[in-house]
Image (cartoon, rainbow, N blue to C red):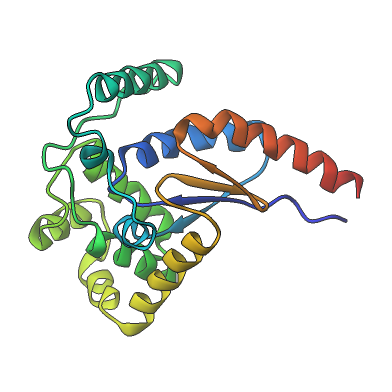
Length: 210
């Protein structure tokens, strides 16, 4: 029997569009019966490796483009009936601690609740999630052993793994977050999710026929 198509979601908690994608992914999983693999990467590391910058920097001084992107985001939110999203007043947030924590959570078997909590405290009940004490209080409130996770996040094993995942993302063509891979095919941005789903369906048919 042919193996199902592999679908990956490369994310960093600091990306609001990664959060919005996270909310829509379950709809696609339900329709396609394919589970997305969540892959933590460090967006700052991707930017440094590719010479990219955040939209806050790249759009500075450009007339009308930022305003249009806000319209586009509002369309996405309405299309998917999203009501939980809140702008983080502390944005941009340095996510190194959070993303190392995500890798530590993978090693510790609590990745899914960690991801839910991370997105929640960044974009639903926004906090300054690069302040260690704020982070500890937030994850503790979400029922996670944050002290254990943060201790493990400082180990060489975790630091090396996050670097490997980030480097691999760049080597495969990534330049930001959210990035998706359906097999070897890459898509960037939340507005590509419809194309992601289409590719899943097409590749699943091909895999089933082989």
